[in-house]
Each structure stands twice: as C-alpha cells, then as structure tokens.
Length: 441
Image 1 (cartoon, helix red, strand yellow):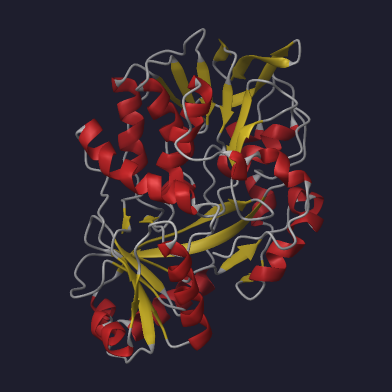
Image 2 (image 1 turned 90 degrees about the horizontal axis):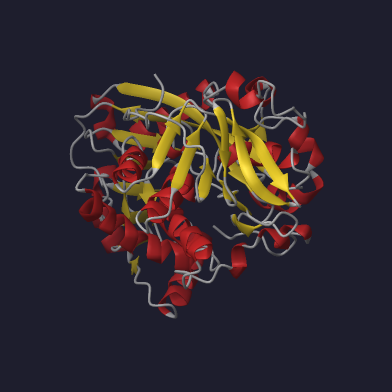
C-alpha cells in the first residue's frame, strides 16, 4: 500500500547530446526541464526509476506561503502563481486548488508565533488572517472542540502528489524535451575541469550543463565529483484514507495531526515534523553540521533503525562510471513505514475528527525528506565545476516551491532575469555554520 502515483510513458530513445541534462525526476527536476523545454532548450530528464516515485508523490501536497522562512517566502509566492498556470499551459489537471490552509491551536506561544509571522508577511504583500476564538472554533467545527485561535491563509492551496509532477513531465515531451525513466545517471564527465557529458546506464549524453536534482541521493552523487554537500534525511510515515468522510476542512494543521483532502476524496494524515533519524555513513559524516537543526527539532525526531543503510542513498562509497550504481540497485526509495507512528497518527486523527472513523485506511507509506543544515535548499552552480548546477536539500518544502525553483534554475541557465533573487540559496553558504540560521518553519 504505497503512495498512489500516475504512470507516464518515456521518450523512445536517449539523445546523444543535449543543451542541458537534468538528473532526477522529482518535482524540482521535472519543473526545471519543463521551463527549459518551453524555452526551446534541448533538455533531457533522467530518472533512475519512475517520475515522482519518491518524495514528490509521498508528501502532503501543500503549496503554502503561510509560516515560510523569509528566505523561502518569495519563491513560495511565485510558485503559487506558477501552479495555477501549469493547468492552463498543459491542459491537464494537477489537482491544484487555492483552497486555503487552516491552522488551529490552543497554545498561546504558537499563536503568538503565527501572529508575528502575519506581521512580517504584511511587509511583503502576503495575506493571512489570524482567527479569534469564535472564528477558529467555527472553522474547526468538524473537531467539535473550542479553539483559542488559529490562522487561515486564503491564497494558499494544495496540489495532488499522485499526478501533479507526472503531468508536468508529460508536458516536457510535448514541448520538445525528452524524459527517460529507468535510466540512472552514473556520473558526470569533465573536460578541462568543466562539465562535458553525463554517463547513464544506457549510454552517454554530451552536454555542457547538468542539473543535479536527485533529492535524497544528491550528496552521494556529488561525492563522486569531490563535491562536499552536507545533506541528511529523515524518514516520515504517512497514511491515506478512502473517500467518504464529510464536512472536513480541505487542509488542516494542528499540533495533534494534520490532514489534506486528496483528489480522490480521501485524506492524507500525518503528524507534522514527526520522523525517524536512520543512522547512515552520511549522517555520521555531516553530523556536526546538523547539530543546530537537530537541536531545534529534537522534540519531533526519534532514533531510527538500519532502514537507511538498507536503502543505500546515503552511502559514502565511490563507483566507476562503468559499474552498476546504488541508484540502479534501488531505483525507488520505498522505506518501511513506522507502524507505531501510523497507528498514533490514525488514532489522533479519529479523536480530533470523529468523521474519519467512518472510513478505512487505503494506503500507508514512508519517505525520506532530505535537508540542508539550515533547512533552506541549495540551488546554484557549484563554483568548483562550471556547468554543474545543484538543486537539492529542499527540507520537506520541495513540492510546494518546486515550480518556482525550476523556473529560477531555467532562468539562470538561459541568462534570463531570475524569477526571485537566487543568492539566499547559493550552495557555497553551506561552508559556513548553521547556528542562528536554521529555518523557523
């Protein structure tokens, strides 16, 4: 019972050359290739398994500005507009709706934090509404509880993780690009110190520009080129219900549990921030750099098991370009769900929203959320290797801001004015410590 996912067909043959090769068929890689193809750039997208089969289909589906860190808010705002345009540009439904996101709380400190964010958001033109006790209790009437307050962000929304990214990937091919599933990138070839090609399991593509958007695999891939990219991932477990529950909010967050209405009519249920930290060689290598992050999040994180070792995405091993790689041995990160967390999530959800007792659990899954030490993605060309652009470490925010990130990367590659200022995301900042810089949300 894994996460639902739309299947798409691949391009027929691998090109011998391309203007740009994008490695990774998740939301960031797909939207990068999408915006390049729409500009008539010859782009090839490589995915070792199926498009969106990892975290891009395993998330909540939230596309939000609310509670974003100041560094991410501009790209989140732009992404919402882009999500709306995708349906018009492709003629297909991504499930995106500006349904608004509802946050409810009985914690004064939490409410104060939301109010402070509201005040900041006003300075950059973002609308969000603090809710009084009466307003919060009315909007949260499905809980049957009285709430001290809350916040409602009317311009935020959700998209459907099961089909949004596949829809965009299919549009890449319509625009003239190519998409290659079950085609792992084994490494990058260099000439005179800069990118000259990408070696795949099916052949080599000559190119001068590569975008590494491999999600939780990015650091181990960068390691092959001598690039030190501090990245760590946590395993989060989620469940979905069958349709049939009525009168519930489209998207609700509480400290107990959060839920999102899916296009099927069912709901995704999760406990915000709750995850397992599975020990891996990569976790130990970058452990010191993640002390500030784990110090901030320790109440939500718990020690994991050897699931991360089994998956192989955080290996420190080196491989030759002619060898079978860890990405071919495990084409889709599909870790075992934490069933204790699944049971706790379902119990909390049914206690909070009794209507959910009427419907069965339809799917259970887990996924790896990759992060940088400061919780902000790394996007930009790696100084040591001209032509190699990193786009990873989206820290659980990639689905919502994926269109904006992809557009910005396409802007950088084509020499256009970037849709947002790319400087806060530059990979070189990770050479410095993260104390005092960890994202607030």
